[in-house]
Image (cartoon, rainbow, N blue to C red):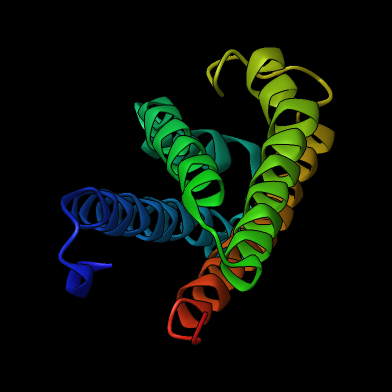
Length: 163
């Protein structure tokens, strides 16, 4: 801890604080993107095909969010490894599990819809099924991201508990 006077503890504490901040910030930013998808669902789910495909072009370049998700995961793993207190470690492990669930939904449902439509530039006959698959998997993924953020909040609150 900072007040111990031991240099190793100060260094660990500063690194730990920075990693915890990165975990919180990256999770909040990822949640913002996830909520954008979830909140647009009611307005897009019933759109005619041509309008829907035009709207989907707004997501060009969003694949770069994969880097943010990697930072989110790695920083959460680092927090879990560096945390000595179970009331910090276990909520962080839960956050990791929720992030993994969100990613599982993406790779099982969202990504195949992107591939089948070539990122919504090709209109296959099954486009309506793919639209539902894409929209609802994103909404469910947002739910898991909310749970991940909530678990990190619990971990952050747990840091103030006396050892």
